[in-house]
Amino acid sequence: MAFNSFHFLAFFPAVLALFLLLPHRYRWLLLLLASCYFYMAWKPAFIVLLLGAAAVSYAAGLAMERAASPRRRKWILIAAVGALLAVLFAFKYFNFFNVSVRSLATLAGLDYGIGAIDVLLPLGISFFTFQKISYLVDVYLGKFPAERDPGTFAVYATFFPQLVAGPIERPASLIPQFRQEASFDYARVTDGLRLMAWGFFKKVVVADRLAPFVNTVYASPRDYDGPTLAMATVMFAFQVYCDFSAYSDIAIGAARTMGIRLSDNFRQPYFAASISEFWKRWHISLSSWLTDYVFGPLTRARWIRLGWYHKFLLALLLTFLVSGLWHGANWTFVIWGALHGGYLIASMLSQKLRKRIVQATGLARAPRLHATLRVLMTFSLVCLSYVFFRAASVGDAFYIVTHLFHGTPELLARVASGDLGAARAAFVVGGTVPAFVVAVLGVATVIAADAAMRFGIRFEVPRRPVWVRWPAYYALVFVTLTLGAFYGDAQSFIYFQF
Amino acid sequence: MLEQRIRQIMADIFGLAPAAIGDDASRETLEQWDSMGHMNLCLALEEEFRIALDGERVAHMATFQDVLGAVAAAQA
Image 1 (cartoon, one colour):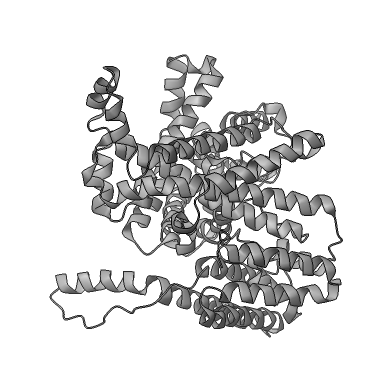
Image 2: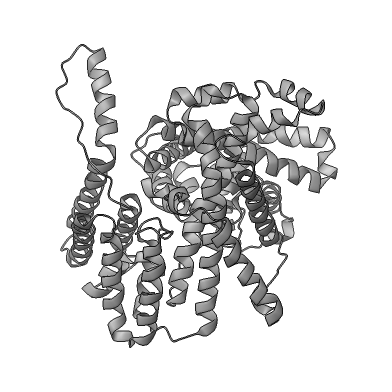
C-alpha cells in the first residue's frame, strides 16, 4: 500500500483509532494484522516472503543464544544472513548478475545458456532484509538479547510505517518500544499528524510536480541542451529529496501517533558543507547501517592484509559500492556509489591543498562566504552524482555530464536580449508554466523550511496561538489538495523500487 | 609535551579549540571524530611524529587515551 493513496487515507485513521481504543495487550495483534494487510495490499503472495524472513530471523536469533559453542553460533549467523541475502539476490540482482556474466562468457566465446528470470521485486525487500540482518548481527555480538516473544518479534519485522522504505531501525531502538504501553497523549498524536501532513505536502505538491519535468528530460536527454539538462538534474535533486524525506516523515509521523519513536532519516542534507557531512544528513539510517555493519568491520578485518591506510580506502570504496548496489541492479547506481567514494577519498587527499587555497584567497577571514561556497560546492557534487542515479543508462549519463553547459552562453545571450520565450522553451519542458511555477515555489518552500531548521529559527507553529495555528494547518492542507498531483499525475515513491 | 601536541593536532583536525578536547574525549563525545576525521587524524599523527601507527590500534582507537597510547607505542 502506498502512503499517497486513498486506500492509506482510509486505512490509517481506522488503524490509529483502533490502536488508541484497544488495551495495550491487544495492540500487538492489531499492528501485526494491519501491517500484513498493508503489505498484502500490493501483492498478496509476497506476505509469505516477509513472514518467512521474519520466521528465519526469529528462529536464528534464539538458536544463536542457545548455541553450545561460538563456532556453532557463527555458523547459524552465516546461514541466516546468507539465506536473507540469497533471497534478496535472487529477486533483485540475479538478472543484473546474469547479464554481466553472459557478456563475459560471450567475450570468451562460451555458450551461456541461462536466461533471465521474470520476477517482480517484492516491496521493501532491501529495507527489511537489512533490518533483519542488523538484528541477527546484534544478537550474535551480544548487543541485544534475542527476542523470545514471537508476537513482539513479528510486529518488529512487519511494522507498516517503516516496513517498505525505512527508516531502517536497530533492534535496540525499536523492539523495546513495542513492549511499552503507549498512553494516549494528545500532543504526541497531533505531532505525528503534523509531520505526516508536511510529508504529504512534500510528496504530492513538490516531488510529484517536479517529476514530469525530470522524466521528460531524462527520457530522451539527447533532445535537450545544457541548461535544460542542468535544470532537470537540480529538479531531480529536490524531487528525490522531497519524495524520500516525505516518505520518512509520513512513516515517522504515523509511528509517532502510536507512541513509537523512529529514527531521523534526513537532516537538511542540502545544507551540508562537505560530502562527509552530507552522508550524516541523507538517508541517515542507511548510512549508519553501512558504517556499523560494512565499513567498520572491513576496517577491523584482519584477513585484509593491507596497512591501515589502504585498508581504510578499500573499506570506503567497497562500502559505497554496496550502497550503490543496494539502490539497484544497474551500473548507473554502482557508478553513483563509486563517485561518492571517490569524492571522499579526493577530499581527504586534497585537505592540505584546500586549506592553503582558503588561506591564500582570504576566504579564511570570511567564514560565512566560505561556508556558503562549501555548501554550494557540495550540492553541485551531489547533483553531478544524481545524473548517474537518475539516468536510464550509463550512456545517457555520460551524454548528460558532457553536455551540462552546452548551449548556456547562447541561451543567456538570448534571454539578456529579451527573448524570454527561449527561456520558457528551455525550462518548461514536459509540463505547463503554471505547473512549473508550482514546482519551483514548492522547492522554495522546502528550502526555506529546511533553512529555518538548519539555522535554528524556530517557528514553533504548535506553540503559537490558535489564530496562527489553524490557518497555517488549513493552508497546508488546502495547498496540498488544490496544487497536489493526484490520480493520473500521482507518482509512486521513488524508493519503492529499491 | 606529547599530550599537548596531540591535543593540538586533534584540535586542528576537528576544527575545535584544544580546550574542547578533554582527557576523556572520545568518538562518542566529539561529533567531528567520525570515520573521515579518524582517518585524517591518524595521517596527521603519523606525519607530525614521523611514526607508523599500528593497524590494530588504529582500528580500535576510540578515545583520547587510546590516541596517546598508540603514539607512545609507535615511538617506542
